[in-house]
Image 1 (cartoon, rainbow, N blue to C red):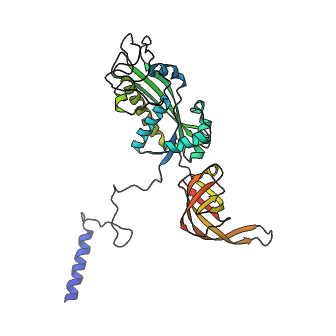
Image 2 (cartoon, helix red, strand yellow; image 1 turned 135 degrees about the horizontal axis):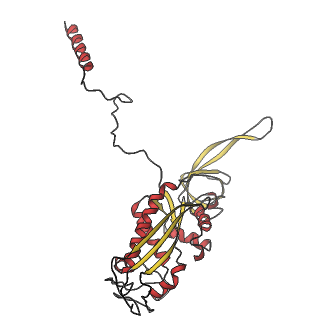
Image 3 (cartoon, one colour; image 1 turned 135 degrees about the vertical axis):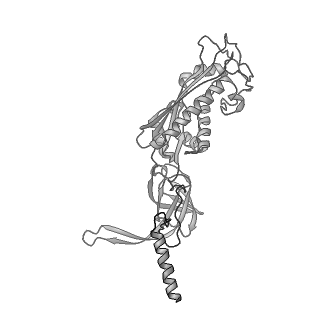
Amino acid sequence: MKKQLWSLSILAMLLAAMLPGAPAQAQTGAPGASAAPANGPAPSQGRKKRIAIFDFDYATVQTGTAALFGTNVDVGKGISDLLVKYLVKDGTYSVIERKALDKILAEQNFSNSDRANPTSAAKLGKLLGVDAIIVGSITQFGNDNKNTKVGGGGGGFGGFGIGGISRSKSKAVVSLDARIVDIDTAEILGVAEGHGESSRSSTGLLGGGGNWHGWGGGAVDFGSSDFQQTIIGEAVKTAVEQMSKGLIDDNTKLQTRTIVVSGLVAAVDSGQIILNVGAKAGLKVGDQLTVERVTREIKDPTTGAVIRRLASPVGVIRVTDVDDISAVAAPISGAGFKVGDAVKTVTQ
C-alpha cells in the first residue's frame, strides 16, 4: 500500500512539472552548485597598464613664466606632478614612482630638450619596464589680454601678483597637449589635450583671491590649494583635469606588455644573487624569477645537438636592483644557488 502511495506521489509531481506555468529548475554545472548571479564580479583582466610621465616641455612659454614667477620655475614638472595625482586617484593606470623615474633620467643624462621626444621616451620606457610613456608640452600659460603686463620681482607674494601691476583685469589661460608613446616603436598611440580658463578675472595672474606665498627651489606645487585659488592656478587645474580625462579614455590603445626574461646566475655573494641580465632584457626591481639547475642534456643521436635540457628547481628570487646588463636579487625560497643556474620569469 505504501509503495502504491509513493508511486502516485511521484506521478503527481511529474504531471505538475509538465503543466504550463510550472517554475523551471535552475541548471547547474555540478551537483550542489548554484547559478552565478548575472551581476557577479567580472573575470579578472590582469594587471593595470603601467605608465611613466615625463616632465612637460615648457620651452615655448619659458620667457613668460619666468616673468610671472620672477625666476625660471619648472612649470613642466608642476604640470607633470599634478597629472600624476589625477591619474593615480583615478586608478586606471599604474604610474611609476617619481624616484624610480628620476633615477633612470639621471643615469641616462636625460636633458630637458628631450622631454617631448618620442624616441628618447621609448628608450627610457624600456629601462623602466612600462607599457607606455606620456610626454607633453605646455603651449599656453598666461592671460587672455595681450596688453596685460606682469612685472618682475622675486621672493614671495600674495593676493595680487608680483612686482608690476597689470593695466587691466584679465582671465588666465593654460593649454596643454600630451602624447602616449609606445616604448617598442616610439609610435604615438594617443593624444590628449587640455585647455583651461579661469572663471574670474584679476589684475594679476597670481591674484584672484589666492594667498600663495611663493616657491622653493625653482619648483611650484600646482596641486596646493593656495595656488589653485589664484586665477592661473584655476586655469591649470581645469586644463590638467581635462587632459587627464583624455588620457584615461585612451587606455584601450595601450597593450599590456608580456616579456620572457631568461638568464644565468653570474655570482653569489653574501646572500646576494647577481644575474647576467638586466633592464635591457626587460627586468625591473620587484620581478620574481624561478631558478633551475640543469641536471641532464638530451642530444639528438644523429646531429649531436642538444634538443632538451632536464632541470630541477632550486628556488625563487626577487630583483632588488637592476642596471642595463645585470641585476641583483635576493632569495624568496630555496637555497644553495650556484653560478650557472638558469633563471627565468614571465613579466608583465
